[in-house]
Image (cartoon, rainbow, N blue to C red; front, side, top):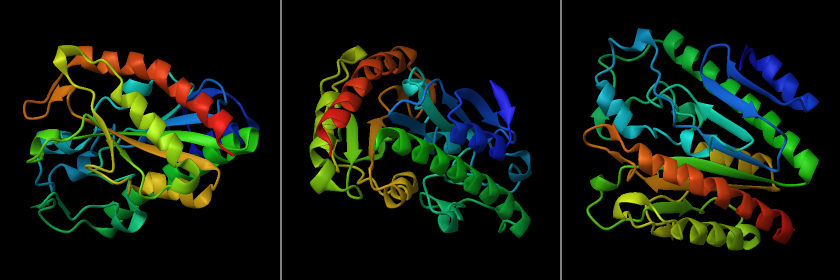
Length: 275
C-alpha cells in the first residue's frame, strides 16, 4: 500500500493503473486490483477522530462507535475495487452533502461544547471534497470502460433501537431509477435474504423498510453518472453487540464469504440484463 496525494490517486485512476493506497492525510483508503465493472464502498467504516476535536466533543468514543458502521469494509475487502472512509462520521459525514456533513447535534444530542471554528470546519470539508474528487474519477473510469457500473454502498444500522421487527438487510431504492434498475434491486435483496448466517440469525431482507437510500454517496453518483446503479445495502448490527461494543467475528466472516460469491453473481446479472 502506498501513501498518495489526491492528485496522484486521481492520476493513477485516469491512467487505468491498479494500485492500493491510503490518502496522504489518512482520511480514506482505496484498492484497485483490477478495473472491474463494480465498486464496493464503505463510507462509514471509519473511526478516526482527529485530536483537535477530542476536547470540544460531548460524545464519548463509544457513542461515536455506536453510530458508525464498523466492519463494513471488512465485509467487502476481497473484491477488486474497494474505497472506504477512515475518519468517523462525527468528524465529517461522507454520506451527507458538504453543507450538512459537519454535525451540530447527532441523534438528538448536542455534539460540541461550543461551535467549531471555521478553520476546523474547513479542515474537515477539504477531506470530504477530496474523497468525492476520487469517487468521481473512479466511477467515470469504470463507466468509460464498461458502459455502466454497479456500486455496492455498504452500511450497517442499530436494529435494537427500533420498536418493531426490522430486517437483517435493508435496501434503499428511493433515489435510483427504478424503472430501469428496479429488477436489479429486487434481485439483490433476494440474494441477501438467502444467506445462511451463524448463531441462528435470520437473514431477512426488505426494500425501503428502515432506510430509503437517501445518502449523499448514492445521490452524488446517481446524479452524475446516469449509467451507474448504486445499491444502498444496510445490514442490521447482528454482527456485534451494539450496546457492549463487542464484534462477532464469525458473523462478519460469514457475511464476507457469502458476499464474495453473491456480489459477482449480481454484477454478472447487471452486465447481462441492464440496457
